Image 1 (cartoon, helix red, strand yellow):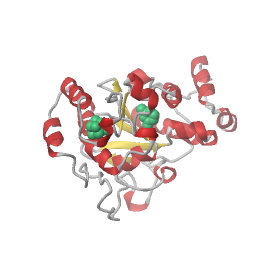
Image 2: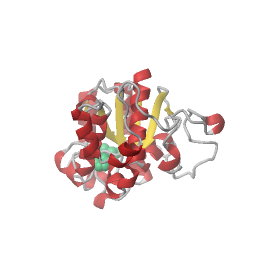
Image 3: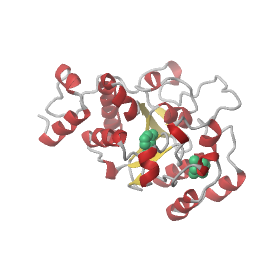
Image 4: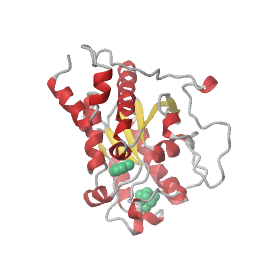
Length: 266
Ligand code: URA
Ligand code: SF4
């Protein structure tokens, strides 16, 4: 039987449809109902990063090997390796390495548990985040919080960061060169946290982290790998997308359960 808190959280996420079709078992947290094989076979590449043999165009960020094909400014790259949290935060706060610095209210560094087992990577700050200086504080953030709480990893237990730290004007997608410039900061955050699992939420996050252009619908359901660190990566839908397409919440819930299962065995 689900406890009241978890049931309330699931209701908040809005997965009643899923729940009624696939009742969560008594041992929900001991043995989550995972209706999808996570370590699914995409042929020989099962469990590996999806950045396949197909070369990406030169102007695309290529990141599966941990190196963007679009080089960030040298000064940023040189200065970031080895920075501790405080110095990294200060560097991001005053960063002018890409055009996004000009229109931001403030850089949004990242938030959460620096020893987190689970790291969530989103896309970019929106208006709310730009104003508050913290990732995922708007409506999408509330949904993300509920989803994380539902698998027993409430917001404060995980670390949340974005691909780019400054808000793209009008919430447009970050440009390739912006993501490339900002990548050193995300890499250092990952390096400092050493998470056991990375959850990419949304297309921009997955594409930039994994160096692929596959749609989220094809990336989810498999365990990818991030180097350096050989860190398992799962991909799911962005909570903002789920707010627009609530019928996809059931799949996101499956992805979250997969995350829970991976962390349990990590
Ligand atoms: N969407 C994101 O991807 N990141 C945020 O911080 C907020 C909304
Ligand atoms: Fe610097 Fe990243 Fe902000 Fe661009 S988005 S100015 S690289 S912190």
